[in-house]
Length: 193
Image (cartoon, rainbow, N blue to C red; front, side):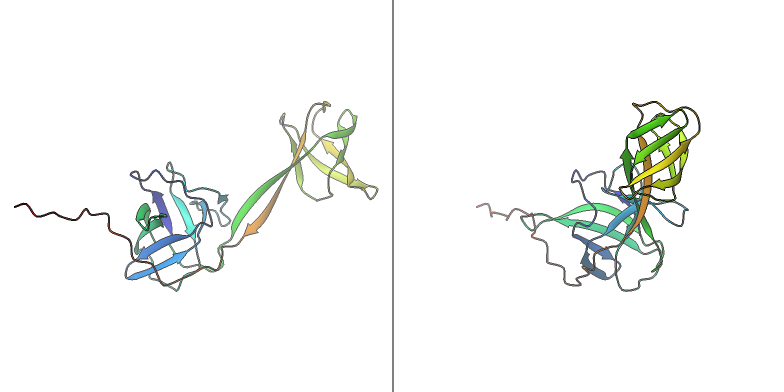
């Protein structure tokens, strides 16, 4: 599903927060994941539904025809349903992966111009520094998480090494086809005599 934040809504929506979905004649409650809407096969996880861009929504739901219109509501404490976002159903793909990036950082333990001994767990991934140097892990040293790293260019002691790690994020299985009726906000009419 591709949705865009409604301009009239001021509510912030976190990922995995319970929302109400209206898709054609189907209504349900679910906890969605938000991710970038891009042509990539592994989109990046987004923590919040932002107002400046369209996001893809991932939930567990019975199969629905593509390109159906979609309305997302959030139930307030007083029972009202506030419109959060509008969009359409993009595709039905059970193999779609949403990826979350975690950045591990460490400081040099010992520096020899282009070589550094870093205190981190051993992983065969590319490294980078805050000042733009690129590098890779050569070999582990001992059994306490030390490793020998090689960087392109000279390294300084105040620089920090960064390692990007990625993991797959799954949606919560919270599909509930029963949606509570919204409380109307109309004021009762008083007859004039």
